[in-house]
Structure formats: C-alpha cells, structure tokens
Amino acid sequence: MSADQVFHSRSEGIPSEGVKDQYADGKAARTWNKFIGDSTQRTQNYKNFLIGLLRKHGCVSVLDIACGTGIDSMMLVDEGFKVVSVDASDKMLKHALKARWEKRKDAKYDEWIIEEANWETLPRDIQSFLPGTKFDAVICLGNSFAHLLDEYGDQRVQKMCLQNFAECLKPGGLLFIDHRNYDAMIDSGATPGHSIYYNCKYPVDIKTSVLVVRGKPELVALDYCIDTGEEGNGKSDFRLCYYPHKLDTFTKMLDKAFGSRAKHQIYADFKPLADVPVPGFYIHVMEKARN
Ligand SMILES: C[S@@+](CC[C@H](N)C(=O)[O-])C[C@H]1O[C@@H](n2cnc3c(N)ncnc32)[C@H](O)[C@@H]1O
Image (cartoon, rainbow, N blue to C red):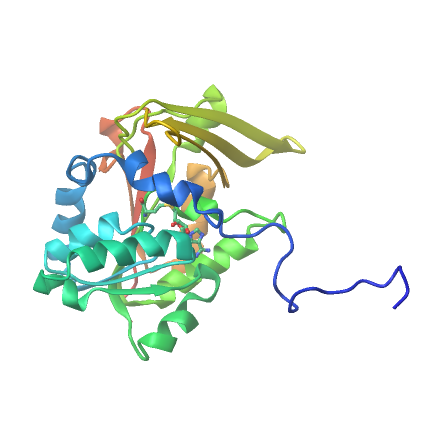
C-alpha cells in the first residue's frame, strides 16, 4: 500500500470524529445523578403537571425517548404508567439499568422496558423490540432534544426526528418536549446554575460559550465543573453542546412535523406562559391529530 492511501481501521460508518453520543466517555453520565440532585425535589417541580395531563388524556403507555439515568421514567413507573425508556447513550443507559436492578423487588418495575434507540431511527428501533407498538405519550425532557446539533445548516435532521416522534404516537397521543430558554441565554451569555431540572447540592460552575456563524447562534457549549468535595476524584469537568432553539422557530418546526390538525400548548417552567416572565425552560405539549 502506498503512503498516500488511507487505511480504514474500522468498519465504514463508524465515525472518527463528531461522535454523536456526547456522554460516550462516561464522565457526565457518572456525575449526572449528582447534577440532578434530590430526585423527589426535582420531579415535584412538574410531577403534578405531567401526571395530571397524562391522566386527563387517558394515557397509559409512555415512551421516554431521552431517559438518561432514568429519573422521569421512574417517576412514571411509580405512578403506575407502562413505561418504555430509550436513549442513544449506553453510558447513560447503564445507570438506568442499574436503577431498575436496584428496584427489582418492586413488582411495578418488572414491566419497565429499557432499550437503546436513536431519535434518527426511532420508529425502526422501537419496532425491533416492540413490533407494532405505538404510545399514548412520548416524553423528551431535561433539555435533551437540543443535543441534536445542526450539521447541514437547515435543521433537516431535527425536523426528521420530530416527525419520528409523532410517528411513535397513537392518534390523539401527546408529546412533551422542552428546551432551555436559549433566547434569554444568548442575550445574557449565561446559564442559570440551578433550574427546575438540576438542583445539585454541590457547587456547580457552568461556563457558557455561544458559537455564532454568519450572525446566527448555531451552538451553545456548556462547560460544567461540579465539585463534590470528595477526596481524589471530587471534581468533574465535562462539556455538553446544544443547538440554541429559539422559541418561535422551534414552535413552527413542531407544528410542521405534527401537521396543522395537531394541538400545541407552550408552558414556561411547567406553568402558564404569562406566569413566568423569564423562564429557564419552555415545555411544548403536542397533541397528535385523531385520524
Ligand atoms: C440532558 S440528558 C437528559 C436525560 C434525562 N431526560 C434527564 O432529564 O436527566 C440528554 C439525554 O439525551 C440523550 N440523547 C441525545 N441525543 C440523542 C439521540 N439522538 N437519540 C437518543 N437519545 C439521545 C443523551 O444520551 C442523554 O442521555
């Protein structure tokens, strides 16, 4: 082989750079539950809201498509919902699987399904382990969707994924999806350390960097430093990157993915929009049209 030929040391399709699983090195995954803080304190911020809407719409089966370490899924299992949890990161799933194992004596947890799946291939991934299944509700919470960056500059992958989410729902099914208030973050250049989702009891420093391409914010990088004070390996540093969804554009993208007959409600930190002047998060609730 001549020197200028390229030797492929891996199968085609295995990326050498731009790994999409931002949790792949295990650092953020290891610290994630500490970053979340007390799980009851976290979920009480939206438990009544979420469970109330799910029950009002008669939802029984819920697909958590960004389950991470399993925090929201476990709240739903505890409340008697039939939960299927997926995530693209095996490092995050490892913690959800461990949590299920620790609950093995609780019969409610026997039915909790945890699998690996990617939003880009979600309907196909779900069919591979639950053929023919559609859900009453899909949740994608904790600023997860923003992890999907925009490599082509036209948000085509994000649009396709939102269509995939709609496809996983039964007619009349609900999607709960959120994003940080990037409009405010870009204006202020800062990320609030405490929020409805993350209430770490240890000091958290988050450095916010915004990448602007041709005048348009295209990426927000958050460099987290969490110091648990433990001797030896108390400090955890990791970077997570997000697409800075603007409320207006994200709203239109969701409406397009679900079609004009879907219903769309927006909440601020799980409260009516008018109640929170500068929310940390926007939560969108989509109701898929009944055929
Ligand atoms: C910010 S964490 C939130 C996890 C959990 N919902 C919570 O609030 O703690 C985002 C999660 O989205 C997952 N994720 C990112 N991109 C994904 C994709 N394309 N398909 C499936 N999961 C993805 C990540 O692996 C990660 O576990």
